[in-house]
Length: 277
Image (cartoon, rainbow, N blue to C red; front, side, top):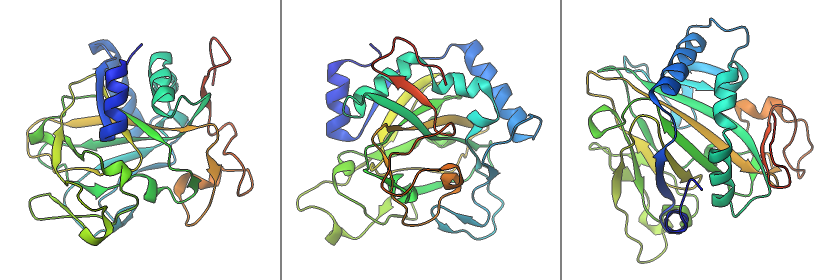
């Protein structure tokens, strides 16, 4: 088992938890090489998005022109079998299924590379994932975030707020010192808002709930910060469109039906010994 019962309990209380290192150096290097090939458009197939998410409109609002860069690649698994194999790792998907209320079926909703280059890497503002996915219900998705470089405070590690996954949808902004800014009236009475760094070593995995508050500041170091996040959804996740989403073009079911299809591959099925995409 990738996660102990204590770690499962920690996730449900805090909304995030660190797992072990799941990639060795050779596996990390292979994913880095594949990421570079996709980013440069050298692969036969292309991802859904490949952009600097700080330019133009993003899921976090209208952004002004900037010299800062956060390279965002969405659905890199469509362009790279190596990344599909990563998202399908049995030890990873089994852990996520347990975190998703012991889901019987697990599909990829989408994946996401975020690359913050040295010195130039910009921030990813405080947010919750689920409000940026306004085509799904319920909010039971879990993300597996694997570092392809050591993610430390100085090069743009994520920060989290424990317990925030239980507070509902809360509009968030980032303050001048990268503290979360929010309307206190929207929070349950008596909760404590305390941001903490979620540093992750190269090849290590961290998990977070789709409602957990998180963000990552700029990369001020001379080291890159690359990571692959795979956003997994239980098989009972429904198509419930409220606003558009870039991956929505792949959804072929009708509103109110479970999201399915080849663009949302099954990577875990409890009834089968092995699952192929």
